Length: 103
Image (cartoon, rainbow, N blue to C red; front, side, top):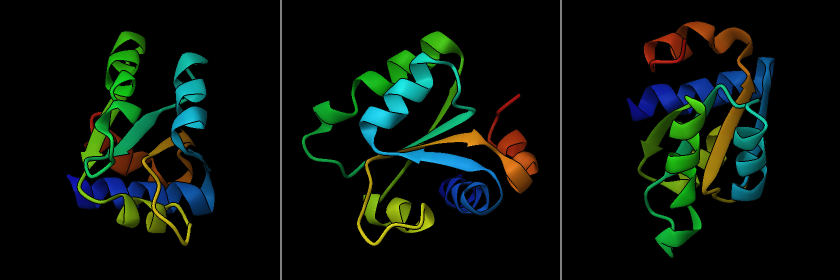
């Protein structure tokens, strides 16, 4: 599932639209613009991301957890790691999002 999430972020970055970072992802969820949210497990302290799964569940947005923030950052086109990414417009990643449970 992690590999599909990384791939979806990468494809959406190239052909759609993503937002990176916990603050931007939180805003995208609150405005119900996020189609899929991907968060990293290795974020320290974990409190940084604790609100995201709850908020996303409340809004009916799928959250996928991946192992490494560095890999997530790379998929998002960054040279550094990122704690979270939201896919706003899926672009060519539509089928992958469907496989990850996005309606």
